Length: 109
Length: 151
Image (tube, rainbow over all chains, first blue to last red; front, side, top):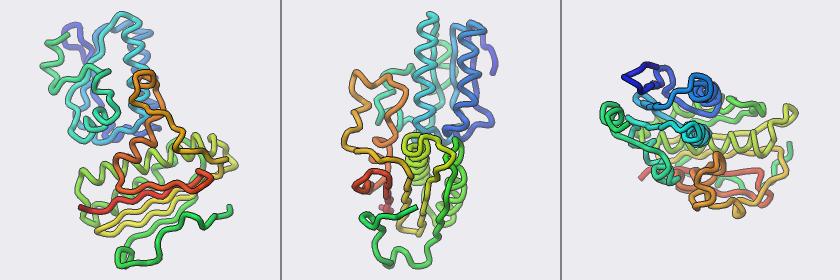
């Protein structure tokens, strides 16, 4: 996790597989950023993430809702093709704010 | 645990000869899917499956096993999930049975509808259907057979 200006950038360094068990661990941390640390601009950089299941999608939906209810903004970037296909098939690419690359996402905040 | 014969994998065929097989009982705990997915992923690599298919098979297996654990067995420590896998260069087959009451997969609501789009759950069966070439539930709904054929 790092800060670029006002934007909190979260990276999933050891998390190439975001299955159900993993996302429950990460979820608590991510919710804490919003609810406890009051971060308003959060970017999830998915570089290195090779797998994501629907449990992770569920957590992302809940996170997105929390950020919005705290008047913040959540963006995502660097999502690989196969994972983006899952976002498309589930139509969640219309719900989330997704950019190709981190730099582009940061400048769009 | 009784096995009902109504959905059984086909009799041994050229696809099955020399294939890797796994048959295992999993506890109904979060994270138990890894007992299967780690070996399955390794074998997919050994059998020459390319990364897009590996992703699809991993996703479908993960979704189906989590469904069996969470929705089928309701995380009951007295219940297990039985998983059988087969991996050959041309075919992957995964069959998952839980000890729950079953369900009707035709009744799963459309997770992409406006009302359900932002619900955190309910996408597993749809993803299984999308990413595998064949999926069949038994009559009761506590067993699912999934296949991926190459090409």
